[in-house]
Image 1 (cartoon, rainbow, N blue to C red):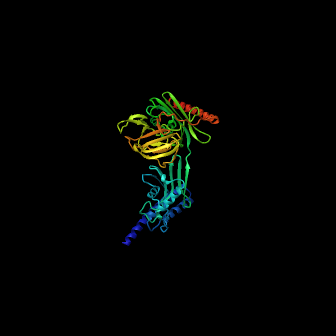
Image 2: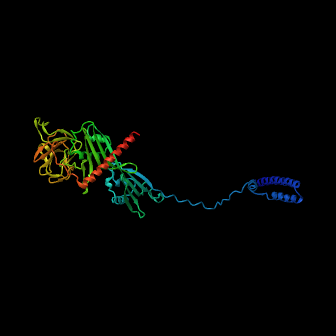
Image 3: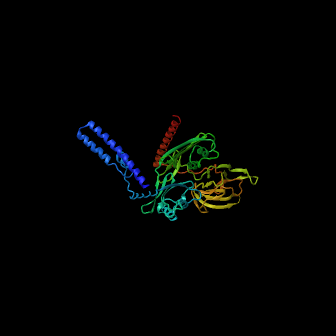
Length: 474
């Protein structure tokens, strides 16, 4: 069999030799036709060389093709080592936004995100220098930046959050403040609180009063705090139950602070307020005196502050006036020695004036009762409260407008309300008709400064009103 194989190879070699010889002879003939004898000899020599160099062993087909017809293949060293694998890229930081839910603490949020307990403690301790984590509000978003350990160096692959490092915390407690915590080069945490730049705007709101100032203002988007300040300012002279008629008007000028995107950060001071009641206009201007005291003044520079408030509770309606009436519980006619203001349970009750608490506790049909002495002649009493404000006791000094208790229906009461009395020389009189002493009057330099301020406010009111009119009717 070996012999037959050799014979087959020899025959294939002989055949290819014959073909090559024929090719050489044809080449010689072409050369003879084209050139001189020397060229013929040279061409003949090259042709014979071609035939002689043809291999006689191995795979003749493959070697001929590689040598004469194909480009040489790249030589591969089978013994060369494979290229070393490149190290994997280290894992990058992960940004995770968590939202505070009811019952969450910063500690629980961090540990739930995969931060180790000791790191969470260290982060909270650093953050507490600029922000109290107890002030977190439900729904508040917090951005966490976490850095996973290299998986190749982490022996524990069972927990995908194992070994997470806290790199940063970012939160915005309010529109006006940003709080950030970052991990320093040495691994310690550093916290910083920065204030967001705010720009001041002067807002004007004006409208028609159909039922109450509070409802009209809320319908027009006036903040509740602004309405409360205006009600307090007018409460010395206006009966908020009886003085308003459908079609009366109001106007308020107040400050508003917003961030760069126009989001409300906080409400500032009320600068001006007016009420037009049955055609009679009442105007008030906020003015800060040189000694730092701030009060409301009418256009003449007279303070509106009186010794006592006529309405010591916000948004209340008079349900029973001063005078003879049929007692709803006892069923017979008797003198009602105060004014009843109907309001929901828990509504704050304010001290009608500066003074000292001289009586406090349960008093017969009055239920929970407080009496405040303001001057040698004037005192006020409050009854049926649900509870007292913290820190109020007999002997407490209170300021006008300070919360002293909350509306309730203790004692003989058919519904939640405040029973309010004004006593002069120990005798109850009608709070709605009493002539109360007025406050101070500005004079001299103070009056000139106030009048200049009032003129600027009036000009600003007109400019804003004109701009609003143009915007509505371009």
